[in-house]
Image (cartoon, rainbow over all chains, first blue to last red; front, top):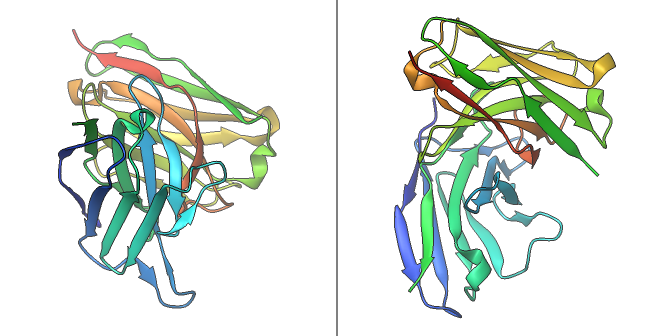
Length: 114
Length: 121
């Protein structure tokens, strides 16, 4: 199985400041035939199911504010919130869908307001 | 509007069985793979199982392989998870999730609210 490791486990950022969450996979999730990274990001607010934010490592889901962006390739990925808003307090997960019939998530990163 | 409504959770003794269901609406069910993802209390997300649009491709997490069986009924727009030989560590909120494509190996674009399974004597 591909192991996904997020860092940090938690972070506190001031309103309006940048938040950065990292995700590292134990092997590359870049599929060479189509040059796509099989990596997604989800946001989970308390008491709610996860919500898709980013797929193919950097494509924003429809309706997701443009302050959210994804970057990276191969084994190292980043989710950036450019200007933190109060409603962004949540746990964020990365997910790989590269490995055939074996999808895995990172352990999650808890984002709070400083 | 896509809706996924899970049911069938509850309190069950270790070693017993339980069957979860997910009723889907708002999209063409048999055009998409479907998944079960669970979340133990206070913990992170764990993919449990996924099934392709025609049931031709199925995957399981190692933690449930041989005990859980995923299935779907496209005529009823429904997804199922048969859980046998349940253990305390299977206690979790079980989410039904819609895959982005026909096949299993993609991200999940819609999630249900979940159904809680508690395994305890």
